[in-house]
Amino acid sequence: MSQQEKIQDLKTRLADVMGRIERLDPEETSVEDIDRLISMLEEMEKNMD
Image 1 (cartoon, rainbow, N blue to C red):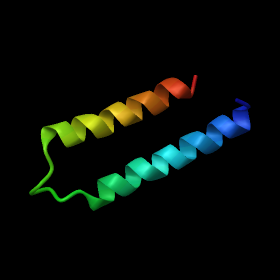
Image 2 (cartoon, helix red, strand yellow):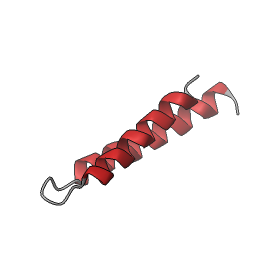
Image 3 (cartoon, rainbow, N blue to C red):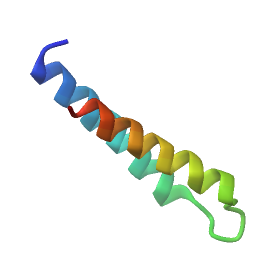
Image 4 (cartoon, helix red, strand yellow):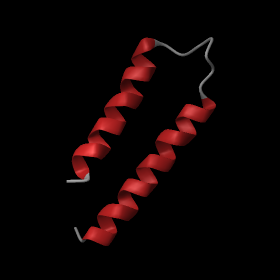
C-alpha cells in the first residue's frame, strides 16, 4: 500500500471513529464500547508506522 493510500485509509477510519464518538449516548455507553473505540484508535496508530 502506498503512503498516500495509507493516509487516505487512516483518514477514513478516523472519520468513522469520530462519527461513532459523536453518536454515543452517555447514558447507554458501556465500558466495552469505550474499549472498542480505544482499540480502533490504537490499531490506527500502529498502522501509521
